[in-house]
Each structure stands twice: as C-alpha cells, then as structure tokens.
Length: 285
Image (tube, rainbow, N blue to C red):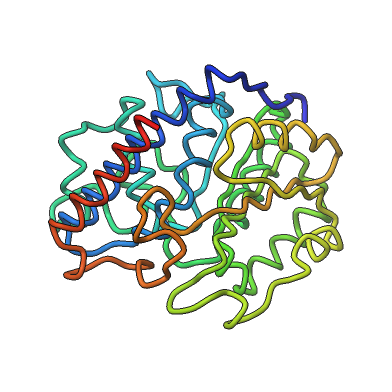
C-alpha cells in the first residue's frame, strides 16, 4: 500500500468528537422518528465512521463518485443512520432528508442501498457480504494498477459468525490484499444476547492472523488511538483493526444494555429527550 495513515493532533481529535456527537444526535432522532431502528449498533460505530470520513479516507466532497476516492462498505448495515448523518454533513445528502429514514418514499432505507445514494459503494443488509465486496474492489484496482486506493470495510462482531466472512478472510490473505482494511465493531453484543453466548469468537486476533492478516486491537472511541493503530499496520498483508466499542455509546441508559439493540415504541419522545440531554452534556464535558 503506497499510503500511510494520517497523523492525529489534539485539535483535530476535539473537532472529530464534536462531529461525532452531532452524528449521534441525528441518529437517535432518526430512529425515534421512524419508530424503529438499531440505536445500540449505530451509536457504537459512530466514532469509527467519523474518523474515517472526516480524517483518514480520501474523499471528494464535491464528487462522491470520484474515481480517486477510498471506498468504504458498511457491512453492518443496521448502523445506517450514522452513515446517512455523515453524508449530510459532508454535503452528499440534504439534512432535511434525515427524518425520512425508513419511510416508504425515501432514499434512506433501513440498510444502505447502492442505487439510492451515489455515495454508497455497496448494498448491505444481508450480513457477512461486505468483506467479499471490498476484496473484489481491491483486486480490480490491482489489475488496473491503482495501487494507492484503499478499501475499508466495517463488520459487526456478531456478523463474524457468517461463514462467508471467513471465506473472504482466506481470499484476502491468499491474494495479499494489503490495501484492504477491515474494522470490526467489537461491542460484544448481537441481536438478543452477547456474542459469546451465541458463538464465541475468541481468540479473535489469532484466528485472523492464521488467515494471513495483520491485526491490532484499539479503542474504537479514541480518535488518536485509531490513527496510531492504523499507522502501525505496515505489512504487505490485509489489515484488521479490532475496535473495542460500547453499544449505545453516549446515551447513559443505552450504554452496554442490549435491550437497545433495536428501538421501537419503547423509544418514546421522553427517552429521546433524555438521550439528547446526555449528548448535550458530552458537548460541554
């Protein structure tokens, strides 16, 4: 890979924290307004997405399909509200569209769809497919001699129970796809219980290394740590960042509580207001 990670200073880290908090506010508003969605899964990955789109990835705010851009596939598509909020802040969506999330006549579907918003590089929703997609993109770029492009993929830890993920892991290792960067949102919960109860993943890092990957663990809510972690991955192998995160991050009554994997009628306007108050406190903390 011909490009190294971009260093992070304290001022930029504070700026990203402000953006991330705004994305969290958008996300909870969207989910509460829709009457359904995945607040816990969305809030856990916000900091990773903000770091990528507002600091690390090469993108063009004027042209979301710029051929020189880095690509990102949000394989854990249930975190779409954060994705859409970020697009609006970049300028690829109108802020006015956000509360249309999950409506019948909207581009903002429950899971990202390629044909609806040009900024989306791959349709996700059927879990486990994202890494295969970025492998294909990376191989195509190699054959075209575009060696300075990078291909990011975000998987949920529960999603790692899909067999296709491990087929894709083997493929990336075999072809030494050094410009594939996978980030696992390790919030330790899925659907209705903990990941460990459903299907234990540990020793997770060792499993990926055995497939020919370079691996690092990182705090998925620390922007500087993520920048340093990516900078440490310098081999000719595909790269994995296991991002330790908190499900429901930023909202006190959601943090670490898997009851908020989904939000529906229980996510009342009163609870939305409490969520926003929590996030306001972070703005001033």
